[in-house]
Amino acid sequence: MDNNADEKSLSTDQRPVGQQDHDVGSVESIIDHAAEKKVVKKIDLNLITLSNIGNANLTGFSDDLGLVGNQYGAAVSVVYATYVVFEPFWNIMLKILTPKLLMTGSCLAWSALTIGTAFAKSFDQLVGIRVLLGAAEAAIIPCVLMYVTMTYNRDEYAVRQTYIFTFSAVSGAFGGLLAFGLTRLETAGLHGWQWMYLVEGIISFCLAPITFLWLPNTVNEARWLDQSEKDLMSVRLERNKGVYDADERFSWSEIVRCLKDPKLYLQSVSHFGIDTTLYALTTFMPKIIAGLGFTSTINAQLLTVPVYAAAAISYLVTGWLSDRLKVRSPFLMGSLASCLVGYVILAVPNSSIGARYFAVFMVALGLYSTTSLNLVWAACNNAGYFKRAFATGMIQLVGNSAGAAIGFIFKTQTAPRYFKGIHFAIGMTCMSMCLTALNMWVVVVTNRRKRSAIAKGAVDRPELGDRNEHFLLYL
Figure 1 (cartoon, helix red, strand yellow):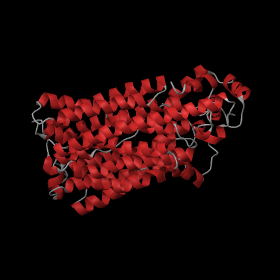
Figure 2 (spheres, one colour):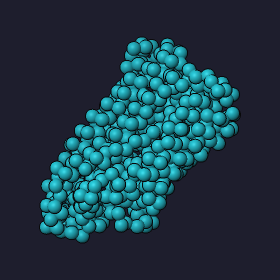
Figure 3 (cartoon, rainbow, N blue to C red):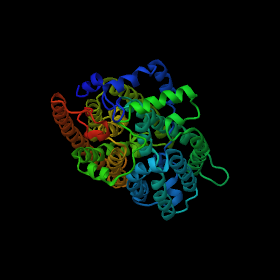
Figure 4 (tube, one colour):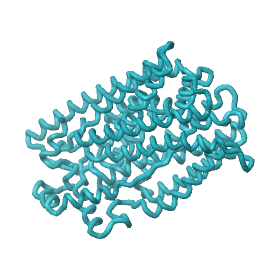
C-alpha cells in the first residue's frame, strides 16, 4: 500500500514537529499502548442528531401548509443555500471559537429552529426557518469531522466517522419509528408532523447543556479523563503534531495553498455526485417506497427502517476495514458501484416490486460509506489544520449543493418512480467513480515522487504539513 512507509518509519502521524528519529523513539517509549487503547475507547463517545424532513411529507405536511406544485421540493432544497456557504466558514472558526462554544451554540440554534418549524403556517414562513436552519446545521456534521482530526491519528479517522454516520443512519431508522408514532397524534390542536418536529427539537435542546459540559476543546482537557489519562493524551497529541498542531494560527497562505491543490477539485466535484445519492435516498426514500405499492403513511415509513439498518451495518464494516488496511479509495469505489447497481435497477421501467425494494437496499449499502470516506480521504491527505478545514469544507460546500438541486431534480410531479431523478443519479455516480479513479492516480504519482525524495535523503520536516516529503498520502 502507498502508506506502508508511514508504518515503517513513524511518519507525520507519529513525529512531533522538529524532532528527529531518536526523539520520536523517546516519545514512543513513554506511551503505554495498552493504556492508550483503553483511553481511545473512552473517548469514542460522540452523538449527532439529524432531522429528516422526508418523513414529514407523508403526514399532512404539505396540506397543512398549503404547499402546491413543487413547493415541497423547494422547501427541501432551500436549506442548502445557507448550509453550503457556511460549511468552510464554520470549519475554520471551530479552532478559533473553540469546539465547546461553537458546537453548543449550533445545537441550541438548530433546536430552536426545529421547534419553530412545527409552528410554521405558510410556505414563506417555512422557507425563512429553513434558511436559518441551514446556517445552524452547517456547524454540526462538518465540524464533527474536523474535531475527529484534532483528536485522532489518521488511521483512526474512518472508524470514528462510522460512529457519526451510523448514529445518523440509526437516527434515520428511529426517525421512521418516531414518525410512525407521533404522526398518529392529533392533540392539543397540533397535527402529527408538528409533534414530530416539536419532539425532535426539544430532545436536541436538552442535549445542548450536555454538549457544553462534556465536549472538551482539546481531548487532554476532558473532565471525564483522570490525570494519568490526560497525560497520556498530551503525549499522543505531541506525537501527532505533524498532522494536527494545536498551536497553529490561521494564515491566508494555507487557504491559497489549498486552492492550488488539484485533489481539492477532483474530490469536490466527485462529492457532488456522491451527495446526489445521499440526499435522493434520505429525502425521498419514504416516497419511493410508497411508490412500490405501500401507499399508506405507516407502511412507507416502517419500510425505511430496515434500509437504514443495512446502511449502518454496511458502513460500520467498511469503515473498520478502511482503517485496518489504511486505504480509502478502494472501499469508496466499491460503495459507489453498489449505489450504481441499485439505481440501474430502479431505472428499469418494468422491474418488479421486490427488485425495486432490493435496489433501495443496494443504494443504501453505499449511502454513508461514499459520503464519509471521500471526506475522510481528504482529511487524511491535507495538513495542517486550516488547509484541511478549508479543503473538507469546500468539498462539502460543492457536494451539499446537490441537496439544493435535488428537490428540483426529484420533482413532486415525477413521483413515485422519479425516473428523471434516477437517471441523473446514475450519471452523477458514474462521474464520481471516474473522478475517484483520477484522484487515486494523483495519490500514486505524488507518493512515488515523495518516496524518491526520501531515498535521496530528504529531511523529515513535519512542520510543513502535507508538503513534507515524509508525509505519504493515503490511497
